[in-house]
Amino acid sequence: MSEELISETLADEATDAIEAEELVSDRIADLVEYLVVNIVDDADGVSLEVIDGSNSSTIEVTVADGDVAKVIGRHGRTIKAIRTLARALAARLDTSVEVEVMG
Image (tube, rainbow, N blue to C red; front, side, top):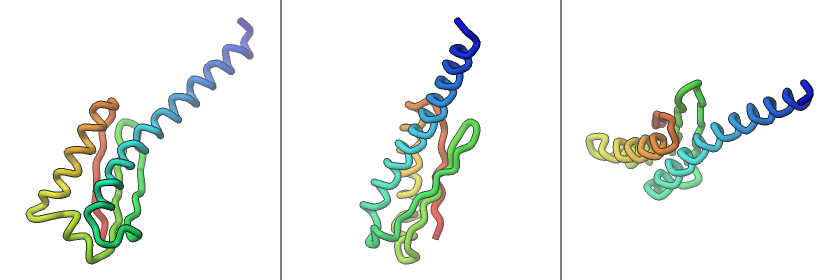
């Protein structure tokens, strides 16, 4: 094999790994978004920001001020359930995730 072919193959594998990592965090974010949008009154006020780290991702969920309490739930039970589902999916995808609610 020529050096050029080897370097192209390595570059392609690195690109595939980066794209796969992005897809993993995007899949988890899609789940979180689906859950949150179906809980709140103002679905248009929901936005997510995914911050990818080296070994984990953080998903920051922003909702309208009136919907923050709905997403958190009584004694934090709703957000705890959302976090549990997100972590379960992340574990299946061999990564870890944190979900934070922003007002």
